[in-house]
Length: 248
Image 1 (cartoon, rainbow, N blue to C red):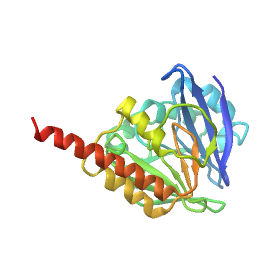
Image 2: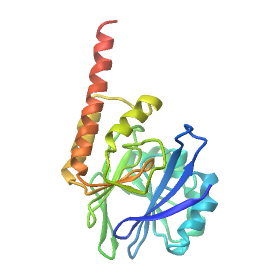
Image 3: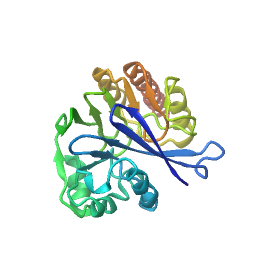
Image 4: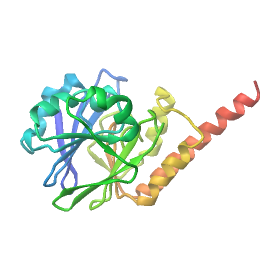
């Protein structure tokens, strides 16, 4: 395995590790995102076993010790398994997550006290970069789930939303909704709930120009349309399950 680096928006770098053994023959990507500012932020700490190659890749962009913030979509091994390893090499870094995630996981797991983020709270990274935390409980899974929106580049750091198979390219303007629907059909990874469609649809109000996927390419184009289409599919799934329950 090796970690590939691509700049997917101005000052936002995708560190991508492709694993063929997951869902072969297509395989699966694990992506971390570095937002460059006076106080650099990394979204996703990655799997603990991938830390050596991810750290080496990041060191090609900035010295790891420069990291000041480590955030992620929810508490799960591929999102934050290597968080404490990063904290060890970045002595000034602080983990940051929503209130629920800090309360149930980070206050115990993190080697350094986390910053608790309220829904809508902004971290000013300096250098023109500002990231806004948005609570998305149970969407796509985990009651502590949330995403980040970088305001200057209109980039939504999506976490597990739009997850898909393969390793086609770092940037795409092609459809990301169809492949995400196919991955949902295969993995059933989402926690279907009545509010899911509305939660995803609310993200479209930010009109993102870039959707940075944790598992898949980074999409450039009409992010609002893609989010609304994904929300429509989850609404369909929830209604289908509700109809099935009524027939029991």
